[in-house]
Length: 161
Image (cartoon, rainbow, N blue to C red; front, side, top):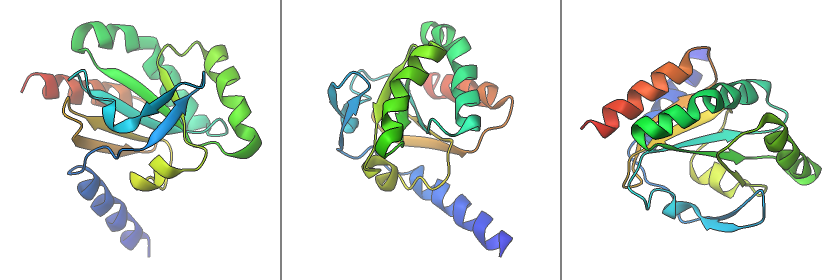
């Protein structure tokens, strides 16, 4: 049974790696609407990270990336977009978490899980790397220490093609 689950997740990642961002309208933590399909309109790579306020590994991952995010942007032009899948009353916890952590990247709210479903996200944290044309080039599920080093290597490889 465990092998079947692992194979399913691998297949899901392979399928996701050939897709593009869906045209779904979300709001950021300040209430501004944004069409997800336009996230790569600048032509730069985008890291799309699904998280929730109750997910400690998600917070560790975003805190780790936040520490080096400015350097990553200067070097590669990459943009980090975090997508909260919090629902109900938990949605009100997102902005205080972001402000308290000092995250200096865009945070979108997906309380209806529309983007989560469209992207096939079943486990968080779930990170997608997109090229400048909106194509999903890689997908990572879960958090492991040092994962940020792997992610920036993928971004560097992407911009040096």
